[in-house]
Image (cartoon, rainbow, N blue to C red; front, side, top):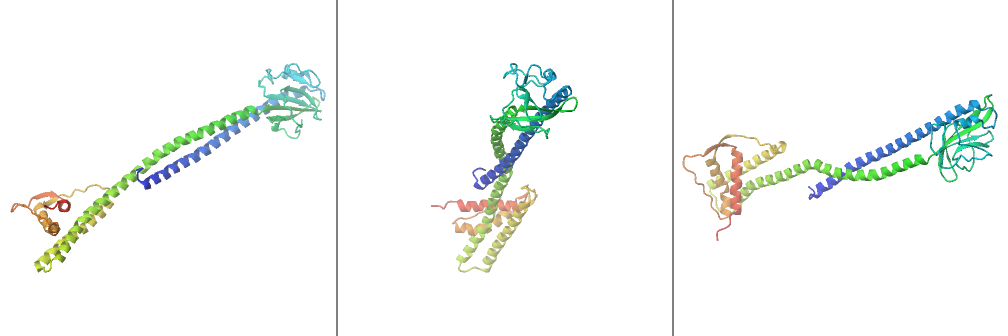
Length: 360
């Protein structure tokens, strides 16, 4: 199949179509998978941040008595890690285990307590250094902020009141996005390395599948070629006989009426044979090349006699003599298809005349 340029190009286009379709599906699936994982990680981060901030807010706010004063309840919720402004913070050491309501034990969280003017009152954890310590008192939704080192943080700001409903300030709970970005970075690399690998496998599978898909068409193409060759061979024999007969007649200066009638009968039989061949070819083109058995009595003696008469002109032109040794009163009747037997013997005689070398 690959030796035929037309089928090779068709197979290449078919394999390219398979691979392109699968590549597009994989690309869409990969992008969808990446967005789904990123969205799930993002929502999980926001939920955890809101949960921690809400727990701290609900636990600390009822115990706040004085505006701008960090009450001991803060140290109850965050034992040993609160760094109050204008005081020493020996326990807040980088890399130390930090506890946030006993729920989170990760170093990438931090908590800040700010009064209404934006003054920093206390911190918990490794607080990032922002260019501006601004907060958004009008929004209690998580926001993304970037520190001076270019590290992204997710932060939520909640309003705090004293136990007598006086505005106390704000609590800000944040978390570094480094872990989140690392997970997405690894996922991107896995997709970038995995998709080309899968595409190579898809290309190989597409080439193999295109071969399977093209195989029936190629077998049909070979059958058509064989059918065409057989049809040409079948048609060539009667046409050769007719041409030889006509050439013989034209070469004879005088023909008797008997010879003329005999010649016309030969041409008529060959013409009928051509008509039968055309009908057979049309029939074969509509069938699945299934043989149709037609059994009927056939006389081999009659077939042989007719063939000798038809090929006599062709034999004379080739300086050959056709003889039939038929016992008298023996028709040699058999069961078979007379047309097919006639065609078979005609092909044998035509080939014998054509390929028999001339005597020296």
